[in-house]
Length: 290
Length: 92
Image (tube, rainbow over the protein chains, first blue to last red):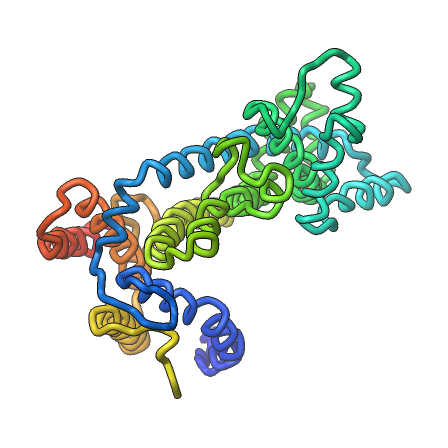
């Protein structure tokens, strides 16, 4: 049967296009304009060419922040993805406990970033915080405001607490979509628990896991509020991630040119990695569809 | 309409103009001459539009790499980008 092609439906996305133009495209264009100019405020700009890009590419500060950011994202992905799968595998499949689990798991996801930051900021304090005080009572020297390692551990544990549920919920949705027949067949073949996971559950979860990894990567790579509230980027620069450094540069020092050059490079890195994830995801879907 | 807050300059206006023209050209091409996606050396299905995206994104990184490593004669980076673009449209 011949399908009629009607491209007029594209007009239906026009409102979204307008919205994106105002919220993303025009600001991005402005950032590009800023990146090649210098300003002393008062809306006066002077041509600077590619100077800021050169400065940023040679800036140790940016490379350090990028390195910290990459390490942070890698660590939280390495923890949250396996942990999320583990949680999803152990969640009940039917009955009242399903709802209880789902509600409990969604709770951290509903808390605003700055509140999560505040909770952990107080939780970790040695004088009044439950965690900090308990650790001190156990004789463990823990202080996230002075020790870089402690600050990192606090931020990672906080992120795991905040976002593992997202991975778990997505993985759970993937698991629920596997028909019982697969498990029955595995039982007949006397497949081990590992074989069931490796050859049935994991392949069926790949699609949702890719989405989970993409979401967690993008979110962790752009993380700002939580570390800003908990450590403020310190001690020293130990937890100054890309966006924290960017805000310091743009708003703290009012270096709009360098900050604009910085953001464009930041944007390009995120765009590249997101495109890779997206392409892999789409190709996985196609392969499964065949 | 006052656009002074956007701090436009001639080079950036040309830059966005070129990208907008490319997007419009490729949209018109896609409507006038529909195509089937093909699989190239990246082992992924790509259309002309995908290849344009890969070209533009890659060119951005090529330019940055040139600026960071060579640091002078930036226009030569554009020649490199054109070679890269030709390669992407031929083989990807």
